[in-house]
Image (cartoon, rainbow over all chains, first blue to last red; front, side, top):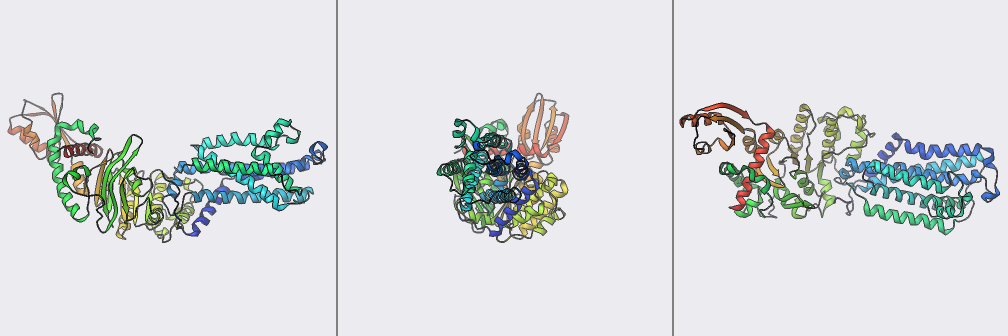
Length: 258
Length: 369
């Protein structure tokens, strides 16, 4: 019954900085998440940008080109890849290795390591998104996001939803292998509904309806609307917030520290 | 209270009187000294009968106070009514076979698990109520802890050092355990022994008032084990109290001021290592075929003999000291020849099991009388 302590930790502030530093080193030394989340997203962006037909505005896509449509899809894809590669697997292995348990015998609360991971991943996501946006603008002549505040909100909610789902997976999976399995089972349908394989706008209406209630299916229009200058409609934002709350609660409820 | 230690006790019934006599004497001696200075409660079942070791009776200068600790996992009672007290600056050993409840005992003692009942005080603090304080003054090395493969030793050390307000000198600690040159090595490149030593260093990195080391030297080679022992003595000399969980008799003998022997969740003996080891390590068996029937009280009356068993027509005598000589002389005096004689010094492990079994039985007898 070891749990995170509710008393105010007296650990020095440098402790958290050191934990963040070590998590960053681990992410750097195990670059699978960066390759998948940052590398592949950038690569796809460049490939799509170089295909002439992808640059043609299409009436069936509401006057946007496939490339335009793919930018928010790749942004939400990179958030999901980074969150899913770096959060559940390592966290479960920390539990398996007894690291969380060892931490809970020190002045540092064990949940700090989780917070440190989230800090590192959020930074990695921010860098990746900045790269995707910059490359789109500089190399492919896309206009800059017109509602940055709304975009920050949409991105923050997307991150929160995916972190919550990742934490819930870490809470429910007993082994790192099981975490990876659950992660894959969640990730591929999510990517399908985000329109990564085929634009959602061109799918049957029922698929589109389902898509709007999936995390990435909500993230893509939220980010897309803010890019073209509108404040995103309430529905995708609420869907994202709902995922963050429900899965955040599940994670908190079921997370085991040993 | 005396119910759940029947299973093991039964099999040594025939040796009860001898065992009881020898153990009773030893415990009384140690117990008397202990209760005077340390408020030790070697066996609370016996205590309640004797009126010793009242719960919550904190002696001054006591670093660890455990009274009537009980912890069950579902139907399995891991720790049952364990009480002991460790003086500041003492190295206190908890010795017992696997599954005896040693780890659960220390995990409760440091607040990592909440006990079902009983009270625990570390430097006067209840670990469940004052976790933040407890974590600052204790250093814990748990069994089977590991670290991410791709962190370097120095990175792990620096991070753990930063957790404490008044950390120890990391270079000195790491050097003492032969990790001084390993700062740049990845954790995964360390040998099992080096990983274990790192774990010990991390337990001491916060310059703890109380260090809890669970199977500290398991997996270490003999030299590394001696280094670890020296380090622990050094740390104790600076005033740290050490709670050492081990199943190595030698380690307990070398390091500990006192040892609590735990079996099936209970303390079955609490003694100086010299007292425990003399009995356990001196245990021998003499096996022979008597030329004629004889009265077994000839042997059971000998101070060297603790038990007699029959193996077909052979007699197996267990005991300590100059056992073989004593048996042969006694048999000879009775006119019985000892044919097919074989003498075995028990291995440590044998002796240990024997010691544990005998003491368990003794506890049961004590509760009944």
